Amino acid sequence: MADQIPFNEKKFVFGGTEFPDNPENRCPCLLLLDVSGSMTGNPIDQLNAGISTFKDSLVADSLAARRVEVCIVTFGGQVNVVQEFETVNTFIPPTLSAASDTPMGAAIKKGIEILRQRKDTYRANGISFYRPWIFLITDGGPTDNWQDAAALVREGETSRSFAFFTVAVENANMDILKQISVREPLKLKGLRFQDLFVWLSTSLKSVSNSKPGDEVALQNPTAPGGWASV
Amino acid sequence: MKDNCWRYIGASVIGTSHLAKGGKCQDTHAVFLTKDSTDEEILLIVAADGAGSAEKSDEGAELACDKFISIVDTYFKCGGTFIQINSDLLDTWINNIHESMLEKALASKRIIRDFACTFLALIVGEKSAIAAQIGDGAIVIRSDGAYKVVLWPQSGEYVNITFFITDDLFINYLNTIPIDSIVDEVAIFTDGIQMLALHNKTKTVFEPFLRPMFDTLRKEPSGKRANLIMSLEEYLGSPLINERTDDDKTLILATRYRD
Image (cartoon, rainbow over all chains, first blue to last red; front, side, top):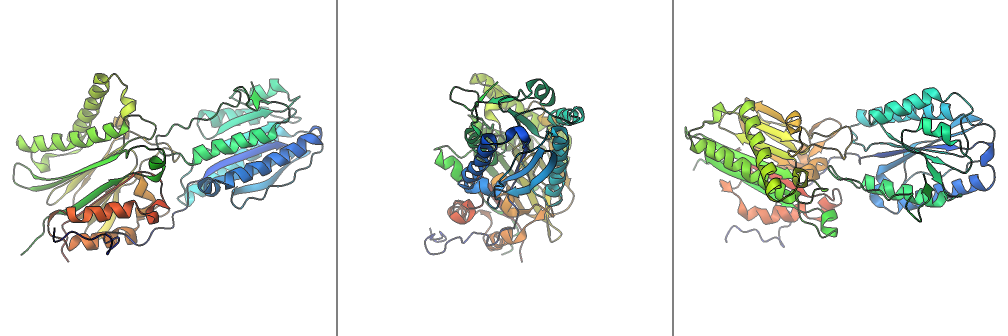
């Protein structure tokens, strides 16, 4: 055929040359971490190691590294925003230390507010995003007012503003955690923070690589060999 | 010789993530040049993106596209005219497509969700056009010398949520837009191309992506430009594009503009 274009010679005869600098979709993950006195010693060390594993595991997936954003709010004596939302490729895991009481209610409220602001920033910048995940990890129970926080969690779950997961370590107050979290709290087996964070990073990789219409199948953490029990 | 007829090209290319899993391309499209009963020249374009999680979504996408072309073509052959096509008629046609997908699901002892796909369609007449959409993907036109996004990708609040023609409530998501001006160029693409052809923040067409392709197409003789398809497919499957999207991608371009 005379008008056939030999594709070896004239590559992309029919190609565009430039792309818009659209930002990557974001997959926000908020960690609400208990750093109260009871976490002192091995628990806090294991938690710190877990967060490092989380980063390493996500950075190994180039798409997840650019899409998953992590934010860390701790509660122990006071509520601290240790890490503002940042993509994992530039995130530097903090070294947390433990002390004092457990203002969990205030931390949940603070976290949900930060998340709301983050979504506004995404929208203002035309950034598409996945449903945010909030992970509450505690070995105790709130020492402050938690009822308002529980109402915000219920509201957020109902409106699908976020998915709220609770991980209970050792002697956590399951009665109150069940009232805060719409989803059944998961009990961490021993101090398997590493396994928990490997699971979390794997799950976030699946979500951040998903496309419209994909059903993201997560591994069941309570399966035999998993890090949790219900 | 004056040649102000449509020149068009389209390609659906498998994404790297489907390729890696040994899957099939779940995108499909069709372009059809015809005339209505008053001899008005009509360009029909349809594209569908099968859902990754639906087993038979490639078949669903194909059925939706075939059915659309055959419904509209039959309408013209039975004396229908382009100017009578309105949003109500499109609603009816798309409902017919949904029902034929339901029938296919029943016949193959499956559920309609197994055939889930998005739906984009455009009917262009001589002086106006009408567009329809369920789900993501977009329709861009050139009219009065400017490119406009007539249908921006639909998605839920979250990026991995969209709508399908197979949804029970598909009629709630169906967007139809009449275009009351002369359309001389169109680009239709599925979500694999969205990030490349649209600028999200400003919600505008990213012209540097589309324009070089239109420039090439404008210089071609009228009709389907089969000679360029290999080049378009190669481009859509190239590392340049795959670095930015791992999804299936469909791009259809048509022009009747003469410099």
